[in-house]
Image (cartoon, rainbow over the protein chains, first blue to last red):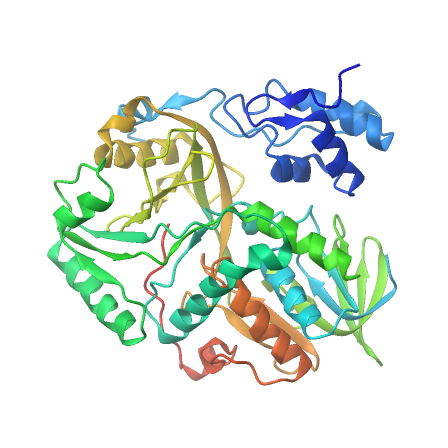
Amino acid sequence: MVTEKAFACLCEDVTVNELREVIRQGYSDIEEIKRITGIGTGPCQGKQCLHFLRRIISEETGKRMDEIPITTSRPPLDAVPFGAWAAREEEHP
Amino acid sequence: MKNRSEVVIIGSGITGLSIAYSLVNRGCRDITILDKGHLASGASTRNGGGVRAQFATEENIILSKWSIQRFRRLSLELNTNFWFRQGGYLFLAESDQELSMLKKAVEFQNRHGLGTKIVDCGQAKDIVPQMVCPSVVGGAFRKGDGILFPFPLLFGYAEHLRRNSVAIETHCTVDGIAESSTGFSIRTSHGIIEANKVVDAAGGWSSTVAKMLGVDVPTRPVRHQIMASEPLSPFLDPMIVTLKDGFYMSQGPRGELVAGITESNAHGEDPGRSGHFFCEQLSKRLVDLFPRLSAARMMRQWAGFYDMSPDANPILDSIPGVENAFIACGFSGHGFMISPAVGELMACLILGERPPFPTDPYRMDRFRLGHTSLETLVIG
């Protein structure tokens, strides 16, 4: 069992406690929790934290894990330097 | 869900929440807000957070000036920190034609007391030292403009409204609206709710909702893409905007760069698709202006809607021919920044009071009568 002060999201410094509070305030939609706390919006883009967040939502709401989706995945899959995008050749359809 | 409410607002975005906030401040608390998604799931949580008064029409300048004053106080009123920072907006011109357009706009803005300044290339570089801009011939800068972080503001509104007994029903789809003896009977996925007054504040979906009231609204949602970089140490104080291609970029409170650009049509209009094309087009421009950012990384990219109206200005009106129905839509990419004034204006219309702002330019019948004034400063 993790302590309530443990960080659930290392990129955005979100603690387990903060997640539980937000859910208890009535925000149980994972997209809302992401926007309110910032969880999953840092450099890892949720790769380290979102399944842990699902577990917390499950504990708080009694929903099964498979009833709780993850947030919409946004491209790119991993951070890409602007220089690499900018250097791509023009595409000619 | 409650089965009746004095006022039902469709849409829990910034517009719906601001209207409810102004209604509550005027003593009207019997309000239900419906949203088909989660709280503020449309354009309100997808935009770049820019707030400016540099507009091209008198009425937009009045609304935005008032709104900026309001944003300065709103943190305290709502007990929430949404990181409003007045670092300014710097519009950049890259041709004499663009510069003379800016000069005209600035002269007009200054007649309305905005204090916007025309800057030359050197002064622009003083404001943003990291920018490399051989093509820039000048710009317009207004320090009072700035950026905010949208979600804490939306969340702050929602919490404040709930404390004042406003009901916010999320994941609740409106399927039909019928006129009834007391007003309206609104059929939703959570059951039927009766309302004396109904407000369409559904953003990109507002013309669909208006159709349920039998009214055609000439707005349509247009997809825009945007991105955020990894967090970087602070270097960019203002929002910068290039007139040539609608490129805009600001640095948020967490150090992320948030930027977008007017997309060429090459990728099509399919709102469900995000493509490499946007990332490439945006990155080329970004690296052009800031070569040092070549090694910085794009972290996340997403899309949202501008609810576009024919003259790029919103419709803020009672719905013609349907008593006690109101609409606030067609914000064309600047809804968030004028939302406090829109809330006041709409609350006055709804309660039959006289709004403290001009209303004629925002009437629905202006399109039929041909009394439109085009807003030319639309970015992205």
